[in-house]
Length: 439
Image (cartoon, rainbow, N blue to C red; front, side, top):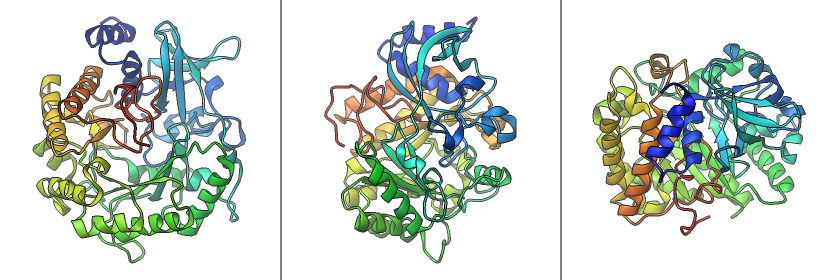
């Protein structure tokens, strides 16, 4: 292929059942995009909602390597529409890569567009600064720091523990930069609270609830690093559960409550349910046994792959299969030096995992791998996985769902190209727009 445009167009032609919007979205998520100075935000003092760095960096460079984009943050997300491909509304999480062939810039009239190989391929919309971001907590902390929103305002992302107790080369997941992201923000002098106070979270949610008059925010996710010991004297279920309990007591029924945690024993999972959590994300990350052991050494050491899978299935007895939604990091299957060397092998492996869970009524979802440069896999694979892998995965995902008669998981908003808001992968964009929807 002589250009990135030629590659993308070839894949759109070869896989016509995958929405063209998803092809571009996956390429932007896997490889990032560059920003002209005309497309950067004025941080929290401007009119555009800036990138909050809600858990990982999701960048292809460290803050010092991003240039002006480290000082004037890019938007949290962008929307693509129109252009020569007549793109339907597509929400894309921003992953900064100054060397990307994709670039966001304003034209002579000040209108933002996405450019590829020097050609304008789509109009770009940026999220307006929400009113609730303009208000601070009593102690001066910003709502964006305590309770940022993503997915075009649909999801409140509560990273209440910003480091992970899987620590060091022998425990950290090999694609994950949560601990580095904490360190780089602290080194840059940015506010980045390690353990968020429950009362501060409630105060931030009160501000959101007060000013989100359209009720755009529909769900919240409680998440953070794995807890192998305790935080503040609490184990993982009680630590994350105490936030859910407080939120549900103060705002009963206002949001769909979700928690991302390890695959815990059934009694601990029951505690999540008792605290008011509605959806459980015990993320299994990668299906292949050898790669799980290599890429998730902490998870293998403390729980183990087989036990992890057993606990995922057991949690369906507590939450119901539809409300257990484990994530995998799409693309690490092909990471050198240990990953699969062909797209066929990688797709076959991941599809095996999809079939395993979906045969039990559990619908996984995925995050498109961003090869962050401070991680072992990011350093070894700066280009990430081939775009073809991501496109074929979307095709395999939809086909597997069809095989087992499943529809889009709850808590993600509307499915379908032009409607989906889930921004860190295209799995929702690639599903039928006319299927039944659960909130």
